[in-house]
Amino acid sequence: MKKLVLLGLLLVGALLLATQVNYGIFADITTTNVWNLLGAGSTSWNFAVQLWKYPSILGMNKDGMLIPAAATEIPKLVKEGNMWTVTVKLRRDMRWSNGAPFTADDVVFTYTTVKEMKIPGGNWSGAYEPEKVEKIDQWTVKFYFKEKRTIRIFYDTLMTTIVCSNYWKPIVEKAKKQKDPVKWLLAQEVIDPGITALNLGKIEKGAFAQVTKQVSDDKYWAFGEKSIYYKNGGFAIVNPKTGFRWQSDNPKPTGPVDLEVVNGPYVNTIVYKIYGNKQVAIQALIAGDIDYIYNPVGLTAGEAEQLRGQKDIKVVSNPQLGFRYIAFNMRKFPMSVKEFRQAVAALVDRDFLCNQVLQGRAIPLATPVPPANTFWYNSAVKTIGEGLSMGERYQLAVSLLKKAGFKWDVEPVIDPKDTKNPVKTPGKGLRGPDGKPVPEIEFLSPGMDYDPMRAQTAMYIEQWAKNIGIPIKLKLTDFNEIVTRAFDEVNFDMYYLGWGIGRIPTYFRSFFHSAEMAPEGNNTPGYANPEFDALIDEFEFADNFEQARKAIFEAQKILAEDLPYIVVFTNPMIEAYRTSIKFPYETVLGGINNYYGFPENVRKVQ
Image 1 (cartoon, rainbow, N blue to C red):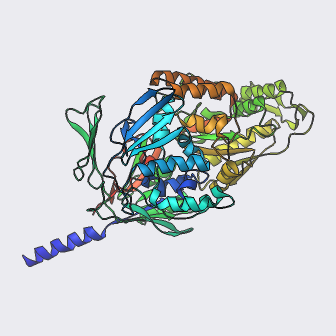
Image 2 (image 1 turned 90 degrees about the horizontal axis):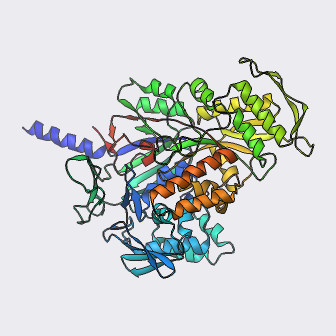
């Protein structure tokens, strides 16, 4: 009997000790400052390690339903005189990790600071919308808007990240006394409180970033809170500890439960180990050194095959919310010429790239809305050159360049009937309409180690362009270099990156609206089209989702014509993890990656 008791104690001890999980990532976190994190520092790696710790007023569940986060309910948009207002009742049970209660002061401070100090970055754009954010009482906030931007208000402004005022207020006040207040504020590398029990711990550049449990279960307000998904589509939030409850109105939760997620955290530590490339990370996963590979571009089919059948490893696939794209710097010649952009786009044979080069591992995409996001995706939008042979594509590209007044020292000769070698005479010495030689165009792309899908397709695109005399020079380089040059310095010709996106295409404003120019915003191409801007405004002002959908469908058509981006492809999000850990769910649009590996809900299995 004593042996059985002792064995039981040993097993319990093992479970208590097994409270660390290890994730693999591929780049250092570059900032711990939330104001910068959502501005120029908005990289996937920074988000994965930190973004989940901050609250917002509203959120969305895994099925895309609008739900309260820090609010007690979904508020109403009301006309008051010449203003539109939203009054938000806040939850009274939420606490920051430093013990301070979450109150109206945090909400007012965040929105006011962003707007008064003009904090840059597209991820802060929603905070600029209200004319005023007013504290009614400790648990009530009122937003005032000049315009009825329904979609933008609910899916952007009210989803803005909120910071802890009692931590940040003295730092912001000090910043205001500096010569360059915003620059000084964004330079402060501090670890601030979050609304979760986990927060950043030790960081060792080039090696790892550590997240640790800093609030005990008995003191953590959200420990044990349930998110309940019903088979009829209804949803409910129940917190047995604090008594908070909310349920959806349409539909109301009835009948059997499909999924119940009980909030943790269930581990004391998450270590994000930094690997130089995916193959090293894959070997670490196989060896058991890490439990999950966080990667915003997922695994290739070959990498997934390498992991299938490995002991204690599971491979999962989900539709992805995201896309890979080529951006043009439209401030510079010749990228400023629409026909030049169209000519390059005409050469990009997505079907060949996805089905031949990438062997079916990617899905050709014409718009910034992936097909899996069915409500917002305009399947009628076609790409320039779609359905043409490669020879016909060359022919179309040459005609587009000629239309804009470009000439060659040696004009390319194309035989569109020759399916093997349609370029009979390669183009040389491309000159602009002014007769001057077109300068070499630098094309930045991540390398093979980071994303072989982009690297491989970029090589083909470079060669296709050179075949007709477009002087594109590919540079495979570090991910962070591309981000810095594109978003901070705006010093590029063309680059090849990808976006992870939300279900509601509010990102159309951030990426393409003329009011969101980089470096302050995310419009890196410098795209400015009044017709497009008007459609985005219409989308945001829409009274209902059908109106908003019609505007976004039209906006997709314009982008396919103007081409600030060449949207190249999307692909299934293929991921892998060790069966020694358990996620609350794994079948979800965008994949486990879209939830940063569920830091508060991942469990260690013994």
